[in-house]
Length: 160
Image (cartoon, rainbow, N blue to C red):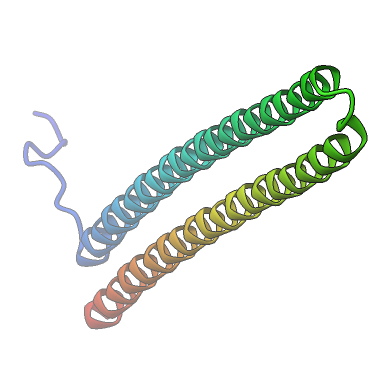
């Protein structure tokens, strides 16, 4: 006859508590990793949106600058054409048109500066939103981790 017992060994109370705590700890780590991955993905999405917004603003600024340059060139061409057509009034008209062209250029430069300022403000606003979202996600992860750790500690204390 064999001296080995045919029944499986039963685990003691502390081994069961230890396994329960290990299971809780593993699930908490998995949850924390999932939340971390989700936060990283969200950060990447926000970065892509900010980059796309910056590119759009840069394209708009370039388009506005090209339009301003085109208007300035057109004004200069008009000034030359008027000067050749009317020789007797060339000096007075040239001064008037040159002044007008300078005013238009100044207005156009101001418009381009305004567009750039708005673009910078929008980029800062988007960056601030992204930072807030990251901070909120970090707080949420920390709170969930702390809550899970507290629950594990309470179960361990209750188990003792």
